[in-house]
Image 1 (cartoon, rainbow, N blue to C red):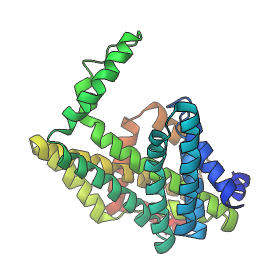
Image 2: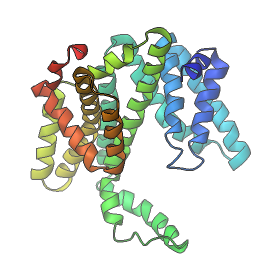
Image 3: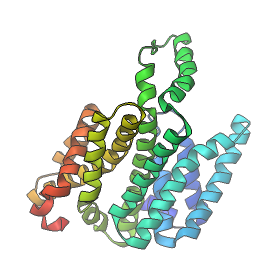
Image 4: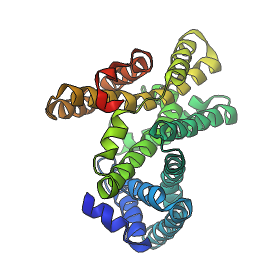
Length: 302
């Protein structure tokens, strides 16, 4: 990874190449190849963190041209590819800019959470019933899957549609944060070895955001209709941020206890095989850390 990071910092052509190629490869066999987009996002974050906002925008522009050209040649139209890739690139650029100017990983993650919250609010303002909007658009896809011999998802369609707004916003936050972490990690490998580990283990979003998350969760359970759905969607977005705080907390406690990396491997395996339950529990662990300060056991995280 250090070699790839050094390659990205070699100039605009290699940076644009990594960002564009990663985004295109991410489309090959989704969802298996989707994480490759985070490498491209990490490259963009690295350039923005190290060189500033304008170089980051130039990388976005060059990558958009490259992706658009491939789309025109291969698909007859490049706009969908550019829009899809840009929906990750621009939030990553913004979060990296916040981190560059504030040197606060918490504020940068908070910026990503703000974008996710804006997306949820926009959906609820634009459509009287976001779930119905999603259902109308997912129904043809469900029918197409059935015609191809796939499973009948008609009964699950209302459930999927209900959570699509929250999941889309949470995916935006998740992708932005992971890309930012990759870029910061690469920056540390090149210029500040070990710096990202210390920074990540100290990640705390703060009691105010934790309190807001709990209030939204309670409101989602108590309120009916659109207000309750809006509160729940916003809570899901904020819980995505606290998932990272929960992961950071586990890293800090493992570091403080001197245990081996096997515990961290077990954590990530659990997140994959026990999704979404493990992620929810870890998010709640992160929320609780806003007040309990578990990581005070770790002088490394202070």
